[in-house]
Image 1: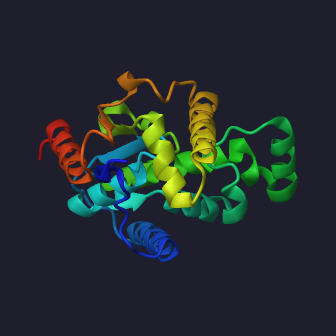
Image 2: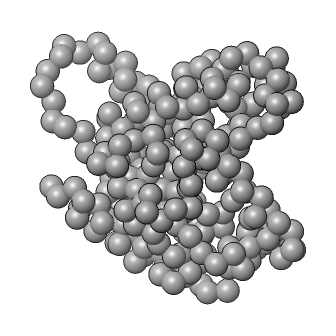
Length: 238
């Protein structure tokens, strides 16, 4: 397994980071509503990162956000949706990036009301993504954000890799057999692409839907960050 494919996620408590990011966003929104309207500078465009499972796309998102001084929105999106809709964050995670069947949808409606159905989840998700984009200077991971925002409003990145390498990455991280890891990778990839197809009627694996496609096996993480940042500045010159 190439060493450049190892995870580069900063060693910070994820729950603490998510809570801090969402609180900052909520406080900023409240502050903006309370202040007199003034002519503000345009928001800096965001970066969306679509990723195959095991490609370390989320880790790349962290590194790019750190390099640019942007906010990262990954699990923070689910917490934002929970606050927007009033639904349980834990239950919302069950529908996150998944297209559900009729029975699951019925149960979600019973347990959480409209906020827990696919339609309710999607409505709140779109609201949060648009709010993040209107503020700008953010990296948004997954959830079809590349199809929510206009092509000119974001740098759209997809992170991929050979399935053997991605399965090995997941096997090591999750203490799984190679067979179990490959099955998990295939299932999660299928669920994410199904979510995109179901809600946005698009092919999430179509390279033409992105400004940049990065092979995480071929390029070391540090260079991946530089490539994404260079592409961002190329698309959105200062």
